Length: 268
Image 1 (tube, rainbow, N blue to C red):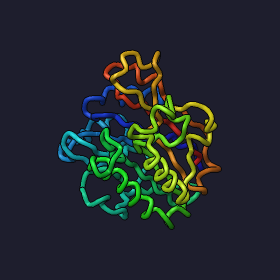
Image 2 (cartoon, rainbow, N blue to C red; image 1 turned 90 degrees about the vertical axis):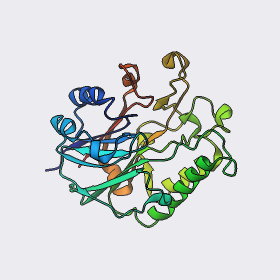
Image 3 (cartoon, rainbow, N blue to C red; image 1 turned 30 degrees about the vertical axis):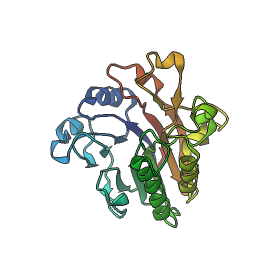
Image 4 (cartoon, one colour; image 1 turned 120 degrees about the vertical axis):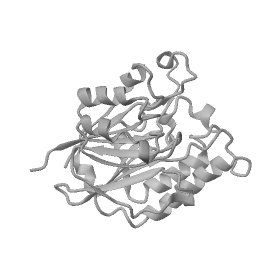
């Protein structure tokens, strides 16, 4: 019998540092699957025992020391899915994927951490920005023709594509994460066959953020946020979507990440 699967995606900004927050979220939110970005831990030091003690018996991860890193933690059985390439040939641990069994057939789940892109929105002057654009172009090409079957793509995509995904569209047009070369590329990637599941629940003319800079002394008062974290689904999954929640309150927890978790309930 199908049931509701609770999926949570979160840029945790160091898994080992924020294990207590993950434990609290597990107790309060009870996700079935957790997709983490910026785990910042090499595979040999991944805290598997601590994660499994939280109830996530199935774990698939790819990490490196101090930077990047992605992981999928699950109460549900899943199989590693390694069909995707090493993006841009850098081996920098920015994508991990699994396949789950569901009532609508095999379901691919992709967890991404897209390059942030540095501070200068010029690919000639800033190799990090050039890498970001190339990464999204390569992902767009790879997913073209691969999105007819049930799939979910989540993660910190480091791009706020819509005007209401940032606190000021005009002031951020030349700030990396909201520049036209980035937003146009993200739209092209989305249009390979995905639906923006967060905007399925929140209209595009309403503000929606998932990230607030550490530089803001009072993030809530200034509310200079951006929606950098995303949940996309292919068309077969759209009728199964039930509820979406952005857990803004987690930004006020002790030693928080600058990102907050996004939770999606899906009938699977």
